[in-house]
Amino acid sequence: MKIIKSLFLFICISGFAQSKVGTIDIDVVLSQMPELAGLQKQVEDYAKELDAGFDKKMANYNTLVKAYTDSEAGFTETIKKQKQEEIIASENDLGKYQQNGSKLINIKRDELAGPLYKKIGVALEKVAQAERYTQVLQINETIVYLDNGYDLTLKVLKELGIEVKPE
Image (cartoon, rainbow, N blue to C red; front, side, top):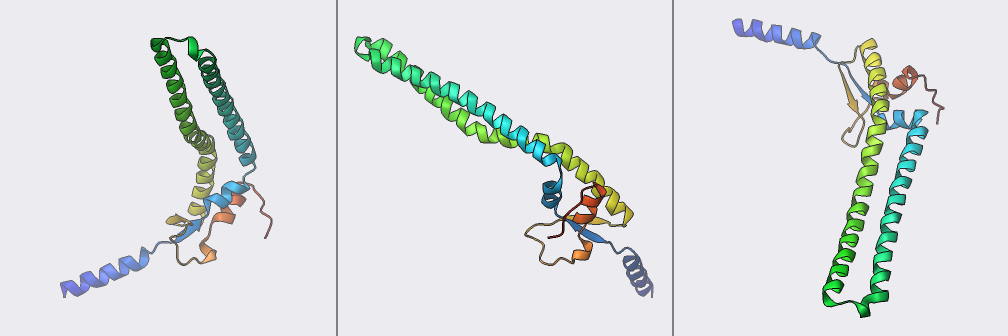
């Protein structure tokens, strides 16, 4: 009898403890935010700065190579080796700079987007609390079924004061 009462209590509690789950497409919200254009401009400007730095390093490399080829005949073996090492070091520096460029751009983009994601998070929290959602999931490829009635994307955009044109 105790087991039946415990089971009945568990069923009653789990019936009352049902959660309300919603979804949001953060990428859609972010793409609609007017601040995104400014963020993209800042990232482009940063990429141009990196390109300018690369161009300087490339010019330095070309100068080293030209100086070496123009004067190679007059160099001693020791000086040739030293100049070749300078050219190799410059090549390696160019390679590292190029590899790190895309990483640095991604870091800058993430750094600049942080406040936008925080703003979305605050709006999402307001919508979720107002509509009593206990969980909100990010829409991605892993969701196999979605009832659009639980999608909070448009409500969060509205909370942010962004008007979305129907498609």
